[in-house]
Image (tube, rainbow, N blue to C red; front, side, top):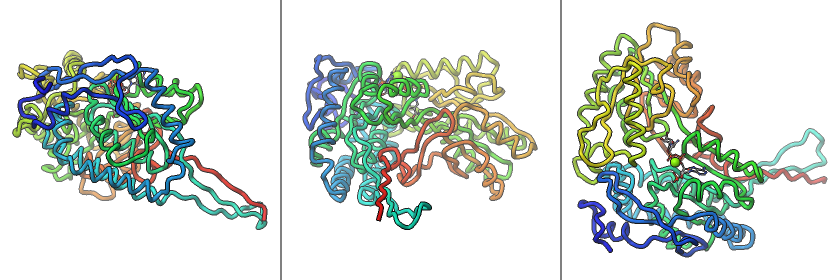
Length: 500
Ligand code: NAP
Ligand code: MG
């Protein structure tokens, strides 16, 4: 049925994959949902339906959890050598890398993001994540401990897989978010059920095919498409799930915590943000302007760590606002597969309406539009112009709430002491990330120390690496993804004491 118009610019191979009859991945097999129901998938650049995917519900979740349970309790997974887990993860990395162009195309038609960006960011970071965690599979260990109780004991700890993990991801980096979840869970020896975001199910389904091809035993990794309430909620509440790992909105994060209360499963959360970018007057202005513009406009502003509050010293404020506004005005908006595209559409009609609604609310509350605004001028697709707002204050919704679109609020500060600037930057319920722009090394470190955020970038923003822990203070989440820290998310520690 490759006549469904996926996108005129997409390759034949990707069009064939997109339009195929999709199945969910349970116990090593691709199967229909129990109900046989499906739901549509849209191309955000056109608003057209490009395919349908199964709508998994509680019964499918249950089947997937039971398969993961068997694979963990009885299957080959608990007995498999760590080196073999590492080898499988490395093989999966190779397979994703081999299909780099195809994944970039899928991400672009499904999420809207520029193909060129998916090709250099989403997909390579996914490959890195699988390789990095492949290395950890053989290095998960405990310690030996001298006891105050005396010499007649020998004590040590061991790190064991937590068990069956439920994982729920959002739509902003569909493939990469899947990798952030799957790679560490499998490296640690867990089995998993992953629910993809309803808006962007396609790259995860392609990844499931590669999981099968890589040779992971049946039931170790199960992948579902479905809605939050229909599939996510029963997964979060399931009594046979030992841990739930969630990335998405703070609002749904709270629901996850409630759902997990039944069997007190472990929970890790990677939630929203309202990250500050702070530019001091001694910063290299060209770099600070380019950097803070990309901090907010990268991925159409749909980043949990987007630099959505721009604080600039009053001496350079006008220059910074002008520079970021010029950058905004010069960004070429186009469908993601158009070679000229620098910014694609937002992911969905719902997100489009939400972001435009925020811009309008900011204007109604008195903000000035230095660039962009609520009208995109593009006829089709969910395009929102990169927007710079000034004359905002900390009571406005646009300053307090996560917009998750290409909208930045620029605010000047004066010759205040560092503590006051840091206090303003910290004046939000979130604490995910921040960036500081200055040539003064001592000032940079002072500000970094004062910020209540899981990530601080100095003279850069949005730098990610599989080796760096990522996660939030305050209402931005619980736990850390990536780096060695993520091993805590997927392991239990056992203390063993022997009387000698
Ligand atoms: P969301 O509702 O939090 O969705 C994230 C994931 O949770 C999706 O897979 C979603 O399913 C699922 N979900 C929804 N309700 C659930 C429930 N009751 N139980 C279990 N799982 C549930 O986020 P969104 O609707 O995609 O976006 C809304 C806002 O969240 C955005 O505007 C943005 O502010 C924020 N957000 C933050 C991040 C981040 O990385 N921190 C990422 C995405 C969005 P569906 O597939 O049905 O949506
Ligand atoms: Mg939702």
